[in-house]
Length: 345
Image 1 (cartoon, rainbow, N blue to C red):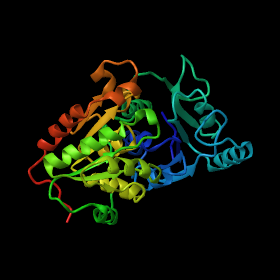
Image 2 (image 1 turned 120 degrees about the vertical axis):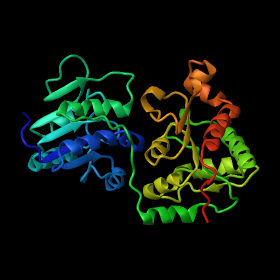
Image 3 (image 1 turned 60 degrees about the horizontal axis):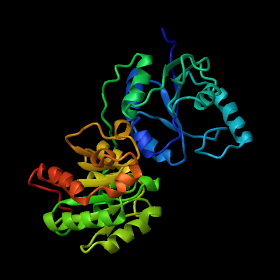
């Protein structure tokens, strides 16, 4: 029988899509330990994520660790962090940062009474409980499988995201009101260039959707992606609203929630669409749909360029993915929606 658990640390110092895919596991963890304080050890941006996740209580900034690339390693800073963690007195620490090769040592150093994570090989002496890390496995199901070791039912695979009325109003104010057709977002960026569908293809798609449905086209993304979106808007014959850099994370999510359709590269925006129940077309090149694609295939259409074009190079396949194929997917989703499409006044 597991001793009482009052303080839990979860280590997952990654990015938006990674954390959104972890929400079902966080939810299962909260249901298993309803009275515990659950802290996320993550990257600085994730403080905003914690504010919008009802299953997490506290954010703790990851200090860096030798062999983990996301934050530069400073031995003195990391040592001070571990000293503070020992004082904190965690009852349980979860390693949700990959296969555990390096990250299991980080979690062990937190000094929790019990530790949990994935392992490489048959044994993992650094952790109290562990499972073998396998590929391919969907990220949602991977982390649900892990928390099952704690006795959770762990069957609810839904992503979710909390949106306040203030956030919804802020997004509403940014969106175009005319014409009266559907509101369609194009999310044109991605951290990795290999995962980006060509600018010209996005531009042609936006024009076709505008003409066929009298749609309002919005370009979404970060401030760093604003020049990319501007280049696409320049290539388009029809007008488009460039929202890149005009939203924080909360308003970005609220914007996606108000769309009738999102067309996106494989990036965090696709998981926000899943979390807000926004219909989407998700374009995959070198990344694995089996690991990252939305699980609801009625609301979300997944296009695997490698499979579509029968090419072994995912990046090359994505570059050659025809606009016609993506437009077919958009037609499928736009025609399946109710007659009353959103019209932001």
